[in-house]
Length: 85
Image (tube, rainbow, N blue to C red; front, side, top):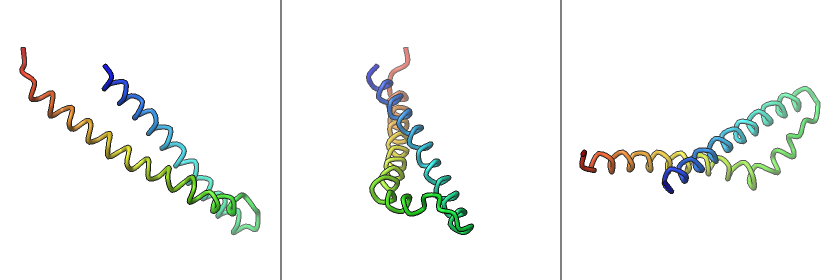
């Protein structure tokens, strides 16, 4: 069904986005630790990428989670309304 394929693609995109957000958090952590030790590990680059890359990724993750939950809830409600044969 189209709905199932759409949900699968949405869930796959959310999983990829979760790992991207986790990677960006790990990069931030390592870069801050490196800065405190006097080693440049890309903190300036991370700051430059914050607005155009990481902020939308976090927003997409939150919106996708809400949409996925809403679609699952609606699917359950519609399935409960169908007559049982």
